[in-house]
Length: 263
Image 1 (cartoon, helix red, strand yellow):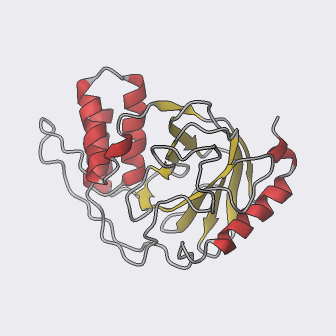
Image 2 (cartoon, rainbow, N blue to C red):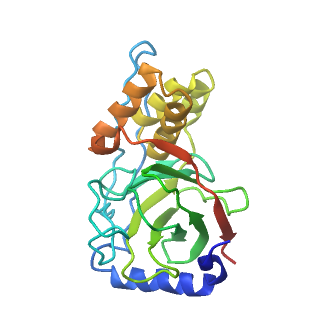
């Protein structure tokens, strides 16, 4: 369907070239290490959606687009820069084997992106070519069932490279972050089973489980766009990690991914 798909070897090579060029920006050797801090919701009638980060150390500290283009595949610089929807530390945790990753993308002439997951040893775990929407907004990338499950207590680097032309170029913008899968505490799992989706999002946020909290609220915001409680929860979560600049952006449908697992 797309030219990049037929040049997968070229694309993968280009991604690793980009990584070498960006070593001065992203500390590839450091991933976050922490023990999650779990707690109980104080009251289901007074939900708090502010993100409470877990203890961590040594993680990368940037969530900006790499590459050397001043514009986002366009003739002018966008008002809002492309960014992963992730705290400023550029890392987060999840409890699911194949999580959903969110990114804000301004309107662009680019038609596709290249998503990769690598472990701490730079081994490719998963890669996919993604068809980009024509409109700006928050896009969702859900790792499919055909991809390897994230292993518990392992750090993985997320890379989203935007393909400005036919083939990925080292100058194309790249977004990077880290993700770790943990096992949900037994007490929290028992509590979660009794909660609504909105309450579950609060539980995740209060316990530092970023990817699950933001994915749950993004789904609710799209399906219940007129629900004031959902809108307020979404705004509170993003404001708590200084991403309020994108809180009014449209939530777009999950993107189609021409995926392949690493061999």
